Length: 360
Image 1 (tube, one colour):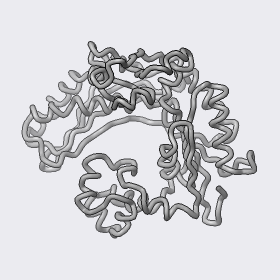
Image 2 (cartoon, helix red, strand yellow):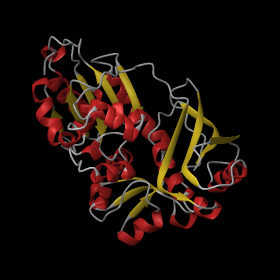
Image 3 (cartoon, helix red, strand yellow):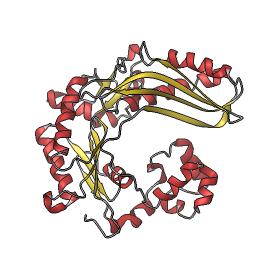
Image 4 (cartoon, helix red, strand yellow):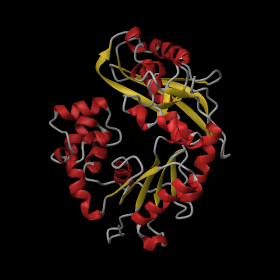
């Protein structure tokens, strides 16, 4: 894939395959014969951080409660996480990335964007660079990685999922229009279950379907996100690979199709949101330390309130329940949106872990 006159970049999205599980199977090859999951114990309300492909055939998925995973796959081998080992493997992978470019934007321990537009290795071919990187990860780290190669970050990330595990997919500038036309809109980052259902009601299943709508129509129906939908369904993404991007917070939130009428209805939604938040935290770079947890509530009159507290005893459901109680008192009316989140400080020391007991 080559840079064209419009200034399109050469972006690689590299993502290791079931990373934690792959490291465990590397260190104990006998585990590759079994369905395995990395996570917490079922008797302590643990959840699955990741699992190998044998386990996925049974329907086991990340963020799933361990007890539920064991019901789906009674022979599942559940292994507690060893974060120091995963961080060591991650550091080796980062070092491989930096052989080709200093424009590396880590998304988690095992995932990153690379801008190789100015790289002269492999005759400047992003496709060949991605292949070399994947071979190096396999031989030097002992795990496999998949990659997407494309002119921008959105397309590269979508592409990296298409030939998993241990594969790669290339989208050239000339193929963007044909590719996005048949791409399902649920693959657009930010299109969750609720938004996807809304799009389906509009007769939209693919990006090609979405292209029929004018910008103003999408902004009217989806707010600010409508502009993002308008661009992404056309394969447009101008975001640069940001090698200095540092997070300050992370959150998950849901806007409900029907307002939650009372406090108990709202509290019933917290466990699912917390599972997703914990899952996303596992993919955050280990240089961050979580200092606070917060909850965001939007009432049916569109007033919004946020309550937070210093994190002192782990990221617990009880902590979010207490925060919600405070938030509810500020409105005490039906709720249309709930969000759970955490705030970070940047430890600035590679290898420091999140100070959370996430796997229990």
